[in-house]
Length: 179
Ligand code: ADP
Image (spheres, rainbow, N blue to C red):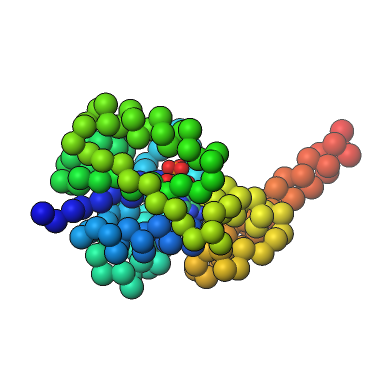
């Protein structure tokens, strides 16, 4: 039997920790689909199409990986794709509680789909998309933690946000001094 795995997440943006899990998964399963969650409640830094393109380029050297997006229930999506496995990455103990709840809920929703947890290399075990964005916002370097394309795009995106915020603050000051 060929085993298809789905690796879901926000990937806003993809980090080398995600890529580490994708590589490990690609050695374990016949196919792995990286599935970007379309979440209307979260405002992402990178749009869906941009995240998709970045992920496609970052995984282009791994033959049995493809990239897709989904909304709604993960188990419904996995069933539609004919996947038997959901892959999740486990970094530290802090991930465990939430992941444990999700895995058991997903099992309740569809007991034929198994969640498999994988640990990244320890180099990436403290790494998250949120932290990467924060470091860049504060002017720090994320070289070696994200693919070079992500680093460039983060610099451009956060730089333009910073300029916009500075422009707005200057306009506010001007307005106040006129009043
Ligand atoms: P989500 O919003 O679903 O947490 P993420 O894109 O942040 O989406 O993460 C997707 C999956 O990848 C999750 O299982 C998360 O635990 C895992 N993950 C995120 N960063 C890393 C990392 N540095 N190493 C290993 N797994 C990771």
